[in-house]
Image 1: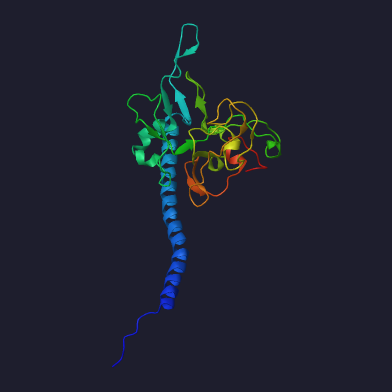
Image 2: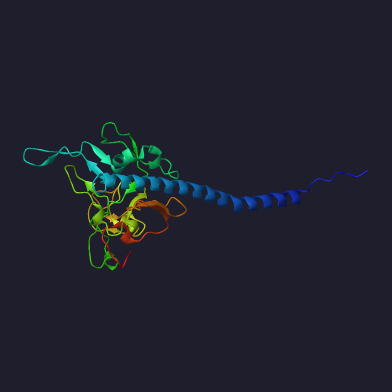
Length: 262
């Protein structure tokens, strides 16, 4: 009569150790594959957004939308008044060409970034703002002359409107649309300085109020561009195409041509 022999404690521990090792190897691979899928979905969102912005541009005589715009009125003396009562973001301007609020939601951002104040009646409130327009305008970190030696200032393609009128950027003004970022994954509502991009992260703010989120102060700007997808971010460019970006260049954030940087 043969006795049935089970696993010894050592054998069980060896099996458990092998399973643990395999899990440690495979789980990061599974997580990376899942994030790759989310990255693909985010780039698809950016592509739809880029197409919507191009349709808007064609309908408005080759004029890009503002990154945001206040609705103001002129008084009898010609001054702009009531400019801070109603606000539209670029998402609102692109909405007639998108018609799908899910496009504005990054699948890797939780909870979603939202904005609920100063909304125009009839517009979704709160508005999901996982993506941010490139509104960089005339602010450069100290020492940036080595990147743009022939100019101290520069601006992005999606500027803001203070309330009455204003001048949005037109297509002919953008020197290289296929190399100029318009919309990005972001961790804040606005992107105003080069110091807020991954191209020049966490640099000294050269003037009061230049860092979104810390208005009225100087110091170090926070990294507004959010590398949510495998240490990179999704971006929509001013010619309508979209892609995943590992590391941007300073010249991708301005409409001016600079052959030393692009």
